[in-house]
Image (tube, rainbow, N blue to C red; front, side, top):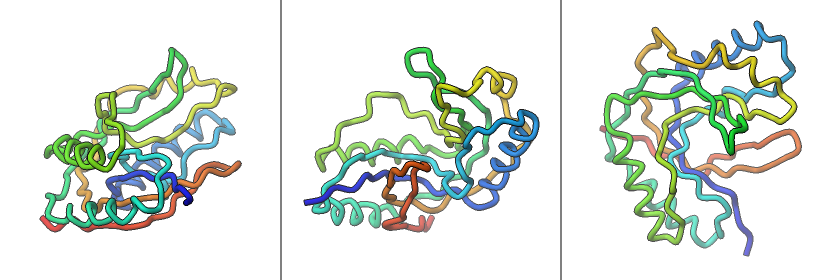
Length: 186
């Protein structure tokens, strides 16, 4: 039986993706770097990374995602830019999200259900963010430091879709294939 590399995400509206893409373009134009930024079509909020998943588990996961349609839509703003580090080494440049309603309840609901399905619980605190750049060892990452901090004046957006994606790793980077999308009705 084959496995698929999966994650559950909150889909961003196009207007929100465009705001982030404009910020990335601003940074790219000022840095003149050849860094490989994430394409705006890949911007999403990961709610739960499942990893390698056997095909026979996918129907249960999709049924669960369908059951989330009664969840309230989420209003949010981008509030900061930051850098995640692993053992002191910068790894991810991200845009943080502030939600006007409680995204943490949804994340906990997903964690609880996926635990029942045999997935490990996440041991890190959930930090809502959009990955803009995966920082490679050879990047002059210190150039990003001037952009870390508050993002001011962003609009409020509404996210109304939860998706299950397959992530396919390739030499040129990852590609995402949407398996299922549930539109939140409230």
